Length: 94
Image (cartoon, rainbow, N blue to C red):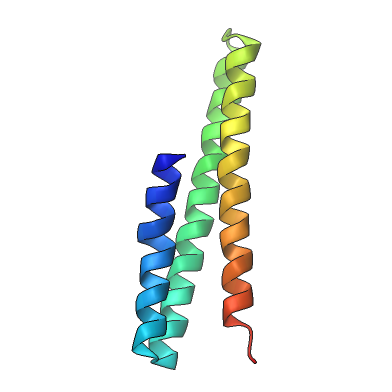
């Protein structure tokens, strides 16, 4: 989770905070798009890692290890989904 927290801070929070502080609408929108791409990429990476873990498990790895990996991947997917939802709320016109 520390790795996810570091990734979220450097990829989502810091760029978004900088864009808000600059108050440049175009720069803000570009930052939001860049963050959304990064979140999508992280979710896809997590999904692919889950697929690899499943395939590895089918080749003989224990069920407990597979379940642990699935849960870890699910946590990352849920965190990334929440980040995208927050970005949607922050970028909604007022």
